[in-house]
Amino acid sequence: MFYALYSTFMKKDIHPTYNPKVIAKCACGQKFEVGSTMPEIQVEICSACHPFYTGKENLLDTAGRVEKFKKRKAAGDKHTVEQGEKKKK
Image (cartoon, rainbow, N blue to C red; front, side):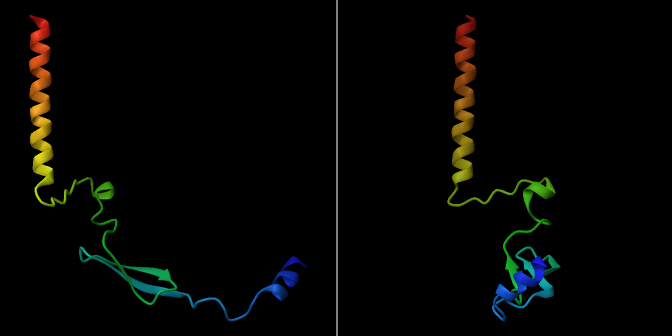
């Protein structure tokens, strides 16, 4: 009964067509099949190249920022060790 009432109030021909077999392409070259309303899908990252799934950390270095951070961190660690040695004396 509910379905009969619900279907009488729904608008017809407003929903996009669903494609059950769409090829999704990742920037890493991986291709996989998904269902979508879009005719084709292109993504930048997928489960084959995402660090959470692969366990590998990929750092994208822009203008040497990663190196600058590592240098500052090393200097901070060195300073912390020196402070600890002074307290022991």
